[in-house]
Structures are given as C-alpha cells and as structure tokens.
Image 1: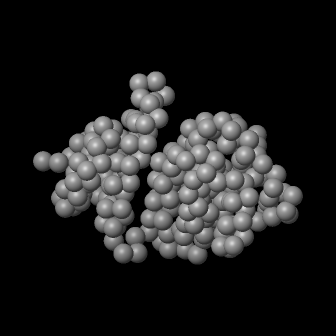
Image 2: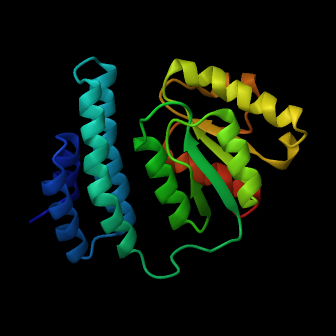
Image 3: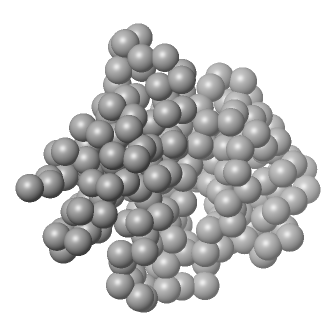
Length: 212
C-alpha cells in the first residue's frame, strides 16, 4: 500500500513520473492533501536540500527535485475541495530575486493560494524594479521575495530602498525567505517578516494583512 513516506522517498530521489503516480495513489486513497503536500513533497524537497547543504548533492539535483515537485503539486491542488480555506481579497506579488531557482517560491505560492490569497507569481530572475512594477500594476497588498544566493541579498536591500525612494514603502509589507537568508539579516535590512519554511509565508501574510 502506498504511503506518504514512499512519496517523500521518490521526491528525495527526484523521480517525477513515479512521484506523480504515487501522489495520485495517495489521493485516491483519500489521504489528506495538505499532509501529502507537507509530509510527502515538502519533506522530500527538504531531504534534497539537506544533502546539498552537506555537499552530497549538486545543483542539478536541486533542479530535478523542483521538476519532481512540479509534477506532484498540481495534482494536490486539484484535490482540495472547492472553496478550501477562507477566500480574501488580498493580493501578493511573489517572485525569486535574480536566481532561476524556484522550488521554495513555488511551494509558497501553492500554500498561499490554498489559504485564499491571490498570488501574482512573477517567476524567476527578477530585479527590484520588477517587484515594484508588478505590485503597482496589480494593486498588490504585499510583496514576497525568494532570495537563494548571495548577490540577491543585495538586490533585496535595493528593493526596500527603491520602495522608500518612490514613497510606497508603507504601502507594501515585504517578506523574504530563502536558503541564504536568516531572521537576523531580514530584520537588519528592514523586512517586515522572514520565513524559514514555505508554510511560514502563509502565517506572515495572514498576520501582516489581517486575515488570520
């Protein structure tokens, strides 16, 4: 019988086709979609990230892990009952600063959507101006930034400075997360919140936008 532990192993081993099939099997067995997402997909991704941090995996493994998660997540999203979570009118611009890596960002996007937020996902390789421009264009209530390598940390600081220069800093709560970030760094730079895990993005958004 298929188990969530099996899905975690397949995600960890970066096997997209097998992981997608396992996800279907778990959903057909009526297991909780959120538990499948968190304990299966997200924990499997964490396993790959831990191996990478320990220098037992390479960047290509991270990319493959992202492909594997991408094969599973839409299936899980479709399994949530219509109207799952309390819908609200809050819009969040979400993207990755500079880098092309999107695993964490995509998970945050999924969890925010499940919890009723409208996510304007601007993808990867973004500049500070990209975040500002899309926030203004979409009428966003918040900006969420994924920072996964050192040069992007400087660009995040530039984003906050840009918002101040354009006199819209108070208009947009800005939250951040990512492999190279920390709570201390985020607070020092002036971010409104920092998340260590994808699910922290939901808590931050709910608290800062008053939807909790």
